[in-house]
Image (spheres, rainbow, N blue to C red):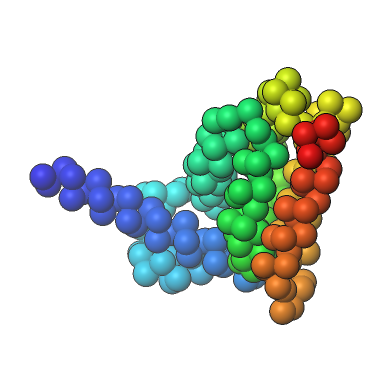
Length: 202
């Protein structure tokens, strides 16, 4: 029982640190946010912080792992059936809700910029991206074989454009005020259906 409580405390403190770091990175930027800032925001001492994360890079890599875990449910859902068009349109409202979160958008831009300068960060996020792209490509292939996806669709190009579209929504949302999420979701659903659906199955 004591071990369970210790693990729960460890997980809770780790989550505190990551949440504080994500808030700081989104608000001030990665390089402007110090370890002292993260200590203060998390409510933990410097000694406690450094026991969990010895460097700022280790925090960023932990955020990358958190991102991978968050994507796992989406990846699992997209891999579960042959109709990728229906699967994508069904999760569009949740995708839009997450992508248009201001903190998420700012954090995505910050980490993306850091990945261009930091090889270890780039490697971690490249792995996440590669996994997501591979799942999309396989789902499109299965959809074409099953007759749900337009057979003329170039899978590799579509994967690139679709991931760029999602990244663009996250980035653009950080600069947009009074964004109507319902209208955005409806528009994205329409775009996906017109873009990917097999004309013969409409």
